[in-house]
Image 1 (cartoon, one colour):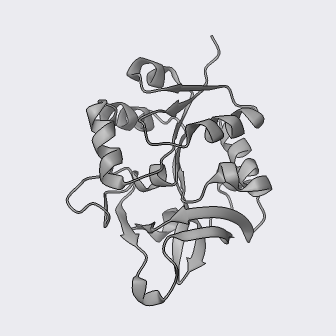
Image 2: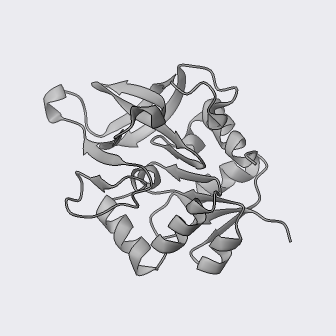
Amino acid sequence: MIKMIVIIDYGMGNIHSVQKALETMGGVCRVTNQADKIRYAEKLVLPGVGAFNDAMAELERQDLISTLKEQIKEGKPFLGICLGMQLLFEESDEAKGIKGLGIIRGTVKRFDDCLGLKVPHMGWNNLELKQKDCRLLKDVPDRSYAYFCHSYYPAPADPGVSASTTEYGIKFASIVAKDNVYGVQFHPEKSQNSGLKIIENFVNLC
């Protein structure tokens, strides 16, 4: 049987548009929350829309946390999208005392109201590429636009995992990449050519 990309369905993702984008770029996808099917996957995608604490509660309720960590440890390519990216971190200002997956060291912070900017950060913004050899960014031009919708942003402990940054009052990590784990704060499925190229690169990862 053909191995495929599994999109984790834990009740909080914009799953249909993510699946459509992956399939448009040549991916074979399955949407599931079943551990046996997740273990069979070649690659994993964790989408997410909503609150950090609710998302972690759902992952725990569905007994998916250990499965996801196990699959990441095995080296399978893993992509977190928006909230799915934030869940890769240790904790979030949105949910004090709630632990994230802890795959990437660091926290998720809220945009400071003192910056005088609209929160959430919503709309198109640039990606300033930092990791020139990041496989997720192959043939993606520097300063490409992506579509954002978020009130919280990731702050990795190691700036070296930031594959791109974006400026919104401050510079924050808009893409992280560490070994086989990738996270994008924006919605690549809504980001036109640059977003679809990122998705294509993920589909083609070995």
